[in-house]
Image (cartoon, helix red, strand yellow):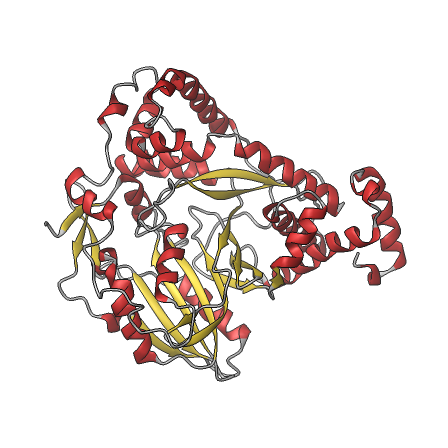
Length: 502
């Protein structure tokens, strides 16, 4: 089999999106209880990560296309590094180190990933992971990282898996079909679509077919005109969508970043509050993010009246059974965070309603297809598409499900996990919510030019959830459904003092 594989159009778009101000690398952190053995970590990575061919390949571009090519001089020592934090070597110093890594480009002459093992002064270790977005999206990389870890401390180093495989099904297919999994059936039913939608859906046609269920139910094709009209409407909505409110969170991005993360919250407690308030865990967490951002603006004397900021939220578009495939298979939806709403419960219910509205939207499919079109088009066209998306947005927000149980890497217990996806264009804030081992953590990566102290937002996240918990404890069930009544009670609780949580 040829060692040269065409990079898919969507992955090409992510590869070309790199800017000095915002690098297209997914950033992860693991914090361990105790020291990690560097040599054992290298062996684990060599045995498990390199089963995926993509991590041994360089992305190169010629006049014809962009290609994945095997690195003839691959050296794992160039990708697994060892660092020491300066004294006192605690959380603050680790966050600063992670921020520096977020601003450091990966070497394009090598496969674009790096693991940096960092020893801290308290006798523990942390692992800072950087992987270029062109290799895979967050859902796929969670699976990759989990494949490096074990359920128990005494697991064999190779995890019971062969040292190398031929690569994923999609990687093997990519070598023969040009990388985009084309489906001739879809070329027969594109005539009614606009030129933009036609190009977009042709790129992602295989995925769209599975997503809409039309491949297994050919009779559904007669409804395709309805789908096409809906997509055209979504294109119009996206183009006409106004820019979000002007706040200190939006501006000209620079090359210096800041990183912070909260202390973990118990997931069982969040689920219990969600059940009582008839909201999902996701609704609760997003509302807490909105509250934390609002509190930060108020603390700095900024106005929040009529303020709405928009966050791009990735939506997984992978069919069932496709989670182990690399590459990018996700779209984006624009969620307006209700920053202007003071009442925590009203803010929660507003967030819930907006998320419900997005679930019935084709926006995620549209943005996925637009990224495919961008990767196929010249760079200046891609820049125009990128500017269209980023001009409407203040932040990128992800909610990533980690392992529900504790995991071990190279024989060391993983105590905490965080992950951030990159921000494109001039977007200056990345918000991350990750669940792991029965706990949830909130993390931020910000541009220094806009937010120099994201730790204050991270600290506020837990307090915003506690406000909802206090309301649940203090309010009678019949009043919880009446935001106006709760509004009066919130004012009363604030008059009683900080002991009430408000």
